[in-house]
Image 1 (cartoon, rainbow, N blue to C red):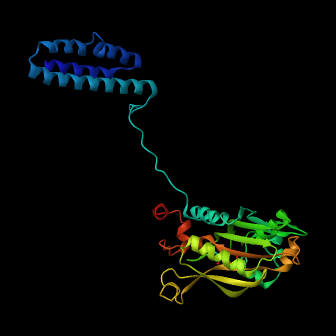
Image 2: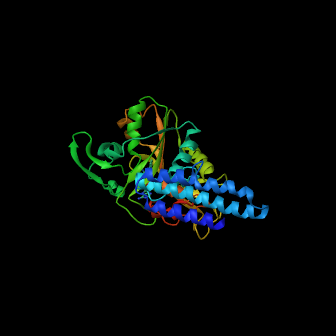
Amino acid sequence: MREEIQNIRNEALAQLIEAKTADEVERLRIIYLGRNGKVNKLTKKLKSLKTQEKKEVGSLLNDTKDTLIFQIGKRKNQLKYGVRQWFDPTIPGKKPVIGHLHLITQAIEEISSIFEKIGFTRVRYPEVEWDYYAFESLNMPKDHPARDVWETFFVDSKKDKKYGQMVLTPHTSSGQIREMERIKNPPIRMINIAKCFRRELDASHTPMFHQFEGLVIDKDISIAHLKGTLDYFAKNYFGPERKTRLRPFHFQFTEPSFEVDISCGICKAKGCKVCKEGWLELGGAGMVYPSVLKNGGIDPQKYTGFAFGWGVERVVMMKPGLNIPDLRLLYSSDLRFLRQF
Ligand code: FA5
C-alpha cells in the first residue's frame, strides 16, 4: 500500500505541473482529494491493516494529503494570479518595528510640561520671520554689530518698509514682541519652543537647533522671580541637587543681562575634569529692556519682565546619564544612535 500511495502522489504532482488552467487544477483536486477521490479510497483501505502498519501507512497518507492540498492551492494561485508563492492567510503576521519619538521631541515635551506646571503657556511663532521681530524690535537696528553673533540666514524676499527682510529665526527671542502684541494686557507667561537657524557647524553647534524662550511680564517682576524660575527648571529637569548661577553678560534686549550656569552634577560645584570650575554654561537671560516692552505695546512704567533663552540640544547634552559628546549625532539619522533613547 505504501507503493500505491507514492504512485498516487507522484502521478498527481506530475499532472499538476502539466495543468494549464485553474479549472484543470480543480478537476485534479476532485480526482485526488474529492469525497470519492483516490486519496479517500486509500483511506478506506486502511481499516484492513494491522494496528502498527495502520499507524505508519496512515501517517504517510496524511503527509501525502497535506502535500497535495498545498501544491494544488499553490498551482491554482499561479495560474489564476501569476503568484509564485502560495499565500496562506492563516499564518500569523510579522509585527512591524515600533519606533519612538526623537530625543529632541521627547525633551521638548518634557520642558513644556515642566513650565506648564507653573502657569506658562507654550506658544509657537513663525520660523521664517521678519527682521523686525528677530532684530529691530529687540534693539538691534540694521548694521548694528551685535547682530553678527546671530550668524543669520537671510531669505531672498521683498523688503517691507516697517518689517524689513525675512530671515530664518536665529533665536526664539523673535517671539517676545509677537507675544506682547498678542496678549496686549499682562500678565504674560510664555514658553516659546521653536527651530532656530545659524550658519554654524561643529561639535556643539548645528545650523538648525531648538531654543526654548521664557517670557514673564507682570507688575513688580524682579530678578528674584527669574532666579526662582531658573532654579525650579534646573531641579526638575536635571535633578533636585542642581543649582543655577547668574553671571553678568550683555544682550541688546535685556538689562541687566546674564549668562546662566548650572552646578556640575558630577562634582556638585566643587570643580572637576568635566566642568573645570564647578559650573556649566546653560544660556542667556535678563530683565526685558524698557524699550522692548514699549515696542510690544506694553507700558514700561507699569510693567517689568524677565526673559531667558536656552538651547534644547544643549540641555539634552547636559542631562545626567546621557553623555552625548557631539551635537551633530542628533541629526545624523543614524538609527544605531537614535534607538538608544
Ligand atoms: C540667544 O539666542 C538669546 N536670544 C538668549 C536670550 C533670550 C537672552 C532671552 C536674554 C533673554 P545665545 O546666542 O547665547 O542667546 O543662544 C542661546 C543658547 O542657544 C546657547 O546657549 C546655546 O545653548 C544655544 N545655541 C546657540 N547657537 C546654537 C547652535 N548653532 N547649535 C546649537 N545650540 C545653539
